[in-house]
Length: 443
Image (cartoon, rainbow, N blue to C red):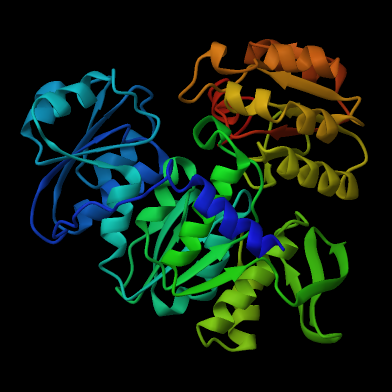
């Protein structure tokens, strides 16, 4: 029945989301690239990949971050806008967060520059590889992408990740030309620029409705993504987990199929959603012909992705956790895991975008309904304005909990009222970075 729904959704929405891929340029020909919004985690990875291919790369961003990273690769980054440098570029790359009123963007348009969205560029780069493994889904795609990379690590794959690997301390790995492992983000239909050898779909839930408008439109795009893939791994399939438990900070469980144990795992990452991610990784790597021992070794050696239920240091608390969860389903998972590990917790949530808070309000209320020790921090707006949805302060009013719009005041509250608690920071915004800047968290 769900298959029929996907097909009908495709035809119902085809008029709105017809997708045509632009003509591919030869990515090997030397060019000067300029990135608008270069400090975004995906943009910086693509910029460095082009630099390592021998291209000249520069960029601009309003929020300058990790300038040492760019200096290492001889990439010049300008604060705010740099229209004079846009004029020198052969190709201008922009992210979905960039509006048409941005000076660099409008300059490139006016000059008739070749312009590529982040998704278009990712698609062009991926075509240089024999086998593209693209991981899509509402949640779990960053960790699943990283897990697949870790299993294939000995084969020197190239990795493009929407997070930072703990072991490599990097959001990308420039490897060989056989495997290209990447996240496939559905926002603005970016994942439709990819033609994967294996397309992975971890799950599908209501997300990015500021773009899709309806869940049916979102389902339509995922159906198109399926059609772009040679093979599709969706969810856990016929596999499931048994004997799930926590042991010495590790997540332990058995992968089972048809009542028979396939393997036992003792993973270094503790959040229970990683049971699903590990099984999806297992299915994907088996499709690539890898053996069980090789897969087990890669899964158990994986040290995680930063800000995915990451234990971080603070001079004021013995234990602090930072988690990237920003969708209600992810938040539920983080809360459930925390309660199995810690006795006393305070959850600090920073909403990500006003539209998501408004569209998924009922789900946010459900996710936090049992939490008496809850604090909301001001919304991370990303590309949005307050009138696009609901603010963090309004969400706190609905939930009946504390609200802060100043990180220093938040810290003082934690130090005064939650001394014997474990602070758990949830959200995809900038709060962890701010807490590092004011020395509450250690980098």
